[in-house]
Image 1: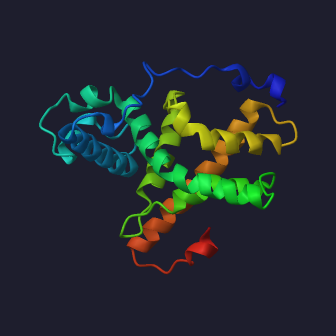
Image 2: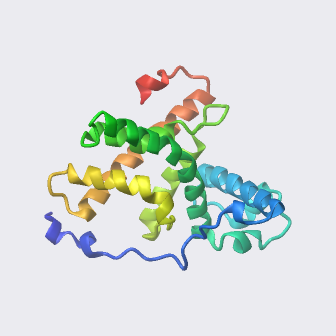
Length: 219
């Protein structure tokens, strides 16, 4: 089917009820900031384990040991806002690594190399693992991709946080030889799904004490 014939080309994404709040935990008092971090940790873990639609906000509050049943709506908004906040927090952490990788690639004249651009996109995710070798954030992102396919919604991340990712995506798009934006997005989403699934499988294998390839070989 050609791009012109693909009905998904013109299908609009449903916007969230509101943008994810960009102030983050640091903008609140110490007590509220601590509560927000606990909620974000619990949300990432439970969404990763049970899926977006399989996790109720009440479960997250219980796991985060929050007595205020309105804590999520108070600090974040709804479920989609919470998903966006989890992604924003992790992106802020990974941006330090990404910016360093972008600078190294620019110095080496490799910002037009597809493999280099994909590594800048995905390697920081592979470096976010807990002490047991689990890639909880990767599993969370994989669940988010599945949720997006069902709901046709996507969390809004503040532009200043998404900047490095958007820059790399733009450079990748330039290397695709004329793909439309919609077609490029579908291909990138497919690649991301495969990559995140493989990371999740590796984490489970580590948890089960199975032999896995060294990180450098795996990546």
